Length: 285
Image (cartoon, rainbow, N blue to C red):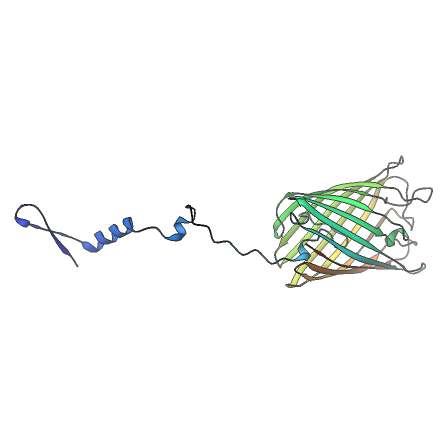
């Protein structure tokens, strides 16, 4: 297809390829698409839908292991929990308490725990911890964090039978992907606030997999070892451990967790392995 354009003396025609000319003209003169003008005044970008809330990913600790990411900024939560310990050659014991947490600013999560500790023969052993996220984001791959903690509980019993207080610090490493794999690893060292130079180290591990949007299954546990000092555990050893399978159920603002398995924590005989159970129920806002 072509058009004739007449101009000049004698009206001599000039032929041009009109398809090419018209296409070029319209491409230059036509207004850009809306998507190309999203940053101009009056045009707002289309917001992306926020992921659904899941309290299972917001709780910084469900039984033994902390997350490196802590809780999302501006969120607060709490849960009640019960614990039980059974082993041969000693009476079964039960305990429990309440754990509360909050993130007043981004990257900082405060965790307060007030337990009647089953491993300390029914003594109250409150603690306060601060988790600082150093790198990464929740459910977006690897994250690194640090923890500082004060607790009214030491590695073992003091010579007079009282429980000493302790300051702990360590590093937290987590991996997470939304509705997928979840891994948390803690390396924590505690220093007793007495004159005998008590030092112990702890390793904590939690692994979970979301088999359904509301259900996560995995394992959670910890082990600790005395590095310095003379205090002994109830069974006379310098190390102990506890942990086992874990099931977490929840969606939206609420969650529950059940963790159980073998333990030497709180066991009074060095030749006996006991069994422990931790049940938690709570939520976040």
